Image (cartoon, rainbow, N blue to C red):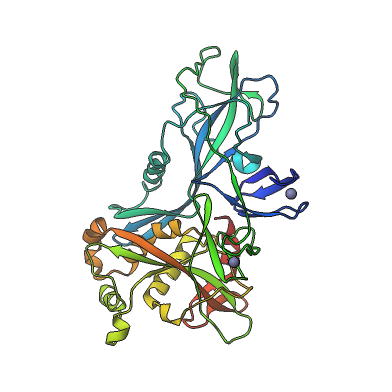
Length: 410
Ligand SMILES: [Zn+2]
Ligand SMILES: [Zn+2]
């Protein structure tokens, strides 16, 4: 699986740079300025035209989804990994998908100064996404009780075309093998828009104390070692996110990040650890103080293939290790947060479906239950390393090292 590569210019000094789609923290090798890439919603990319001079280019929008579809079935959970795109405008005769083209070339971020017409999407992302879900769930046994997505979810790709007697694909500068007869093309039906979007750069400095924020290039959460705070993008600004850490006396463990997500849950009583013991029918006897502790969901805060992700989310949710944590930043040897909490929230109902008992009530309950996240915190847990795995020190749960290193592009 490849990510997009993006041609780019440092906003400070104009030096050319290459970014990967997953990069968030950009450190310019020339002027040394570090900035964090933010967008109010999703990233927009442009496929560059081959010989743009003298052509009246128009750009067609394509919705892009990369991630995993999760499905709750009466027999258990299933998933499918997708990397797809689909034309977002009504454009008969035009390519309905760009296939893998965008992965094979260098893209640019959409910018206001790019010449050409931009066709407005006529289909929303959710409409297109529902069509993906339907198409890819066709081979699954029915009924599908609930479906969700996991991973970086969306983006808009603009691909250039032009008409000159006939239609041309401007990326390759070749005529389009189109169903439209030469001369018959009309772009009158297209609605233009001036894309009101730009990439936002914020200096990677602590909004509270001005200290340099620390993080790896793909990190969604940055840390300030001066005032001990953690920062997470919310729209176009960085907001503080509470971070906890499980201290470990053992020298040199590797820390992996998890989201702790507190929710309001309808139709079942699941507010405390005592409720969890009943809902999941855990073979545990809990005393009153343990039983009264607040329940929250746990999920990995890093990308991982769906089966491993779901297994860890379910195991840590059943463990409820909140009382082992203290508010603190992780040591330097830690894995970056690469999964947005919004994506983690998408998975919660599927996590719940994994442990809800009795199983025969799942179909009936899952269609009714609403899981409404209310707040979240980060937790960094220590893992010791052996040849193949990272093993969580307190619970013995393992994450395969290979799987983790392959998950960066998911
Ligand atoms: Zn620079
Ligand atoms: Zn600070």
